[in-house]
Length: 246
Image 1 (tube, rainbow, N blue to C red):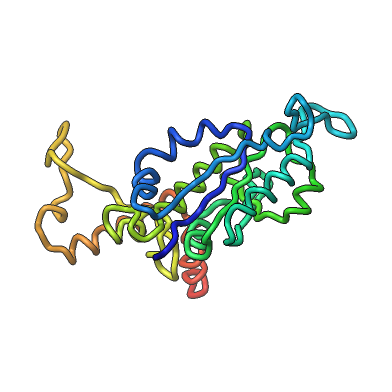
Image 2: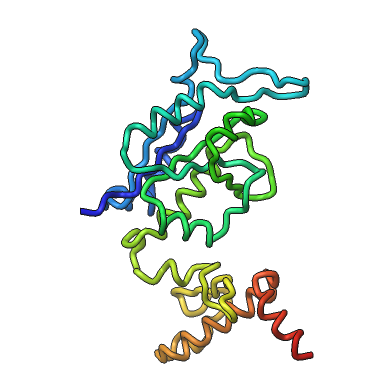
């Protein structure tokens, strides 16, 4: 029997994960046996009576820095709890951008993920170098810690697991799926539901005629046009190809 994807989350605030991950698609995926997650409090591995895991930075400056020893011991202990090798991920604004491609590759290639949600000003660089995690950023902004980015990463991966969504093709039709010219990742098309008219606004007729091929073609064209208007950078390949013929 195929084992569920195991996700270990190392954090200073383990209590905030279950209310979010236990709901909606991630919660249903766990009930279906597709994924399991475990949170571990890094403070449990502090070697002092006050469970202190941070200290002032050498060289001065604001903020506190997470110390090497608690995180190192935490990673080693958690990894020993399952024989499958873990893909280590550190959530940090200094990492590679989280993209749909990143989520797809982690969902397809990993049997086990170990996510490190740092806090404070940062983590002592020596333990980062020793652990050699894949460093991932969820955007060019700074949050108080890695907990929310870890949830974002988990959600983006779990919904790609076979059987996680209600319709097998749902993920392939999302924004950033490979569906555009030259393999471009397009934004999703507009969607409509009942009533057919709302505040004088009507549903496009093509969606009401029952011609599935025309619906498919309309949606695909809408994806291209919306991407060109809102995220032209995603169509760079198409633009480059057009320029070559000018």
